[in-house]
Amino acid sequence: MQLIKITRFSALLAFAVFPFLRLNAQENAPFSRYGLGDVYPSQNIVTRGMGGAAVTYFHDQAINSVNPASYSSMRYVKLYGGSKGALISYDIGISIDARTLLSNEPANSYHSTNFIPSYIHLGIPLSSKADERKRNVGLVFGLKPATRINYSVQKIERTSIDSMRTLYEGKGGMNQVFAGLGKKLGNLSIGVNGGYEWGRKQIGTKINFLNDTVGYYSSNSAEKTDYWGLYLMPGVAYNLKLSEITRKNYSYSEAIFLRLAGSGTFSHSLKATSDSLRETYANDANTGTRPIDTIYYVNKIEGKINIPITYNVGIQLTKKYIVGKEAVASKWSVNAEYSAGKWSDYRFYGKADDRLIDSWMFRVGGEMIPTVTSTRLWNRATYRLGYYTGVDYINADGNKYKVHAFTLGFGFNIKKWTSYDNQSTFVNTAIEFGKRGSNANNITENFFKLSVGFSLADLWFTRRKYE
Image (cartoon, rainbow, N blue to C red; front, side, top):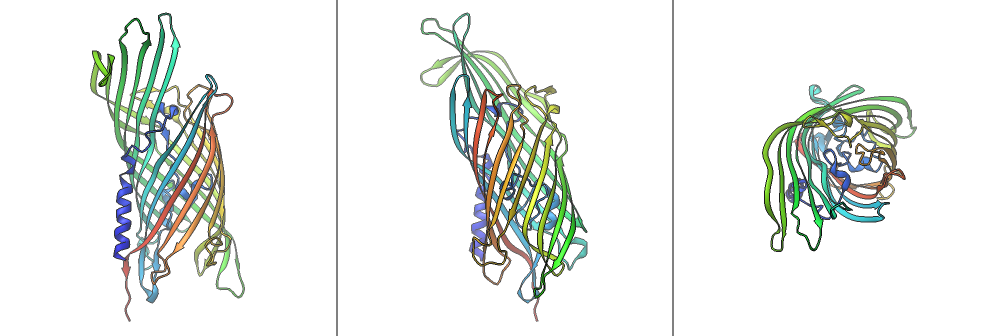
């Protein structure tokens, strides 16, 4: 048991530093040039398999940070002999992201495949039926990347002087760390995430003339902005039982539940400092480039980045098995969700970004388990399917970028058949294949994502009983 705990701790510690590693050196994402970059999916791997419809998803082990009200589903469990223990959840996710950029004019394509760490979550139930004041309360800590910037785009054009090459480059991104609480009050669940986000946006533009006979100095314009600040994300859900049927000759009943849920991140401001450079340079065989003259340089320019409000609302219909008064397992569920962000309110040092627009996304998906009590892995596996469509917040060419994708996923409950019968590992997978852009856009993007998540359970704070 001690070896298992050490191994899990080592794996989590290693994963915790992944968001800060440059694991996407081959990536070239021109869309990440705008705003704070491409947005990482905020859903866990389970809900990515259901079209990303996450705001209504509750589970006692697979942590859902999209809606902090879901933390109230974490629980203490009964052990043999009447003892109790807190079912601690370690939830991690990783993705492999394959993208193909297609350009109509000029006709060209670019392929990239990247490993992307998704999140690391730790969930601790603070509830016990023995203490009614703390009943159905969950505490979660999390760390995840939020956006990424990584692009290198070259443009060659003919001017009145000579042929000119312009190289646009950028790198950086934003990370988030947070703590959240969720509590159940009858049919109502409420929760909140409070977090800290920080990152860097480093962009540059290099211009040089292409001429073999006349020497021109090249120009470099570069800006580096570091930013940081706090954010707040509340969530709420209401669960209503529609019907219940007691199965004769069995010690359980089947019930249909309806859940309405919503969550969102309040608009907030991030503090920022920026360095700005304008210089001429020459190419050097040894160092690559050699500065010639610094035209303008200023550092530590203080300012603010205003992040707009974003929100999610959804509905879920699910069938669950009831033993006594407690829902012990789900047979199937269907989810629908609408999310939006008012990105036209985004401001960078007080300036609007005309390449950003208000975004929206509609998601629908579901899951089912063939036989909950089966001992065969494939029979008690969870099968998921989903679809999402909407408009991206980045409007690079002014024609809007429509996004649509199909998803599917599988979940496997790998039970540890020991005296600690509530310890188990859920292995979840999700596959997404879709497109950003349409015939109205010159540059479009096809994408394929394979994501894997591990929800590991362990027992802490065990309350023993002795006879």
